[in-house]
Amino acid sequence: MKSDQENQLYSLLRKAGMKATPGHLTILSFIQKSKKPISSQDIINGIDRHLDPATVYRCVTKLKENGIIRQIDLRQNNAHYEFFDMAHHHHIICTGCGRIEDIEDCNLETVHQQILGQTKGFTQIKHHSLEFYGLCKKCNSKN
Amino acid sequence: MKSDQENQLYSLLRKAGMKATPGHLTILSFIQKSKKPISSQDIINGIDRHLDPATVYRCVTKLKENGIIRQIDLRQNNAHYEFFDMAHHHHIICTGCGRIEDIEDCNLETVHQQILGQTKGFTQIKHHSLEFYGLCKKCNSKN
DNA sequence: AACACAAACGCAAGTTACTTGCAATTAATT
DNA sequence: AATTAATTGCAAGTAACTTGCGTTTGTGTT
Image (tube, each protein chain N blue to C red):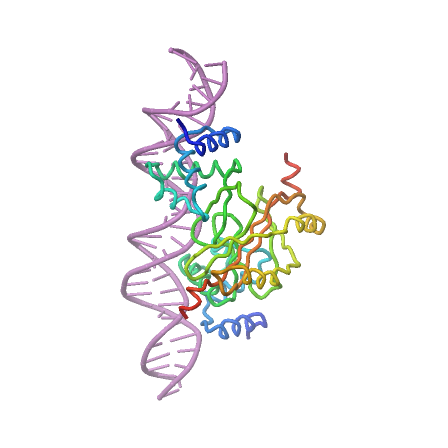
């Protein structure tokens, strides 16, 4: 007897042409549950069952290639990921402590066409990444 | 007899409170001359005189801390940097070959205030990073 | 011009974040 | 149930830095 959530992730993987292995399911479920972008190390440390680090890195790469998760650059020393199937949004990151908050409302898609009209070298924009860097209240009051 | 460019970089470093050492001058000059964001490895391989990799990493960090150069995330496997004293702009990166082009016109600064009005956790936005990812003409025609 | 001192440097060793090769296992198709 | 290609764990390897330390060198001061 599988939970609804398990079934949902199962078909998500199969639709993307991936096997529904314990590794894929465990990692994907963990990313989906997370409220913030997480790193591969976070996954390795956070999951219930043991998975070899090499396996985690390989799975994350596959999930990214198949468009199930999305990579986020937080200007930290490793890549972060979040579930792809959520409303398009961006992040604000505290340069003091690394705290992350979501920023909604982004109408940069209209800018894509505008850019393609100007550039000579590019024919296609697939996506963009926009991050804001600042100080959170806690870190701001420390000074 | 020093060149104008050398004098300019010298005073730029001194104003920032940094020593005008061969390492700082060589690296800063190399970054300034470069048309694109470059990595520490690019610097190590590209400079005329020999500098130890550790020295290059340390200098780049210092130059960044002092606001003389700026870090760019290109979703490649290492950090890239560019001279700070150039018009604010963004980049479009080819996901096929890594080719980079500058995107001008950015009026996201107005968005900063808007975001600060909405968020509860942040008090200050220092800067933002916006990168577009797509396919350049060359890579697009390969398929 | 010489002195003092903190900052910068080179070298070697260490660390972090992955990546790769390979044999054993396993999910999905037949 | 058999087949097969993808996945996994383990071990070894690599890329991109980072750190410790003794020596050298800019810079402000005498």
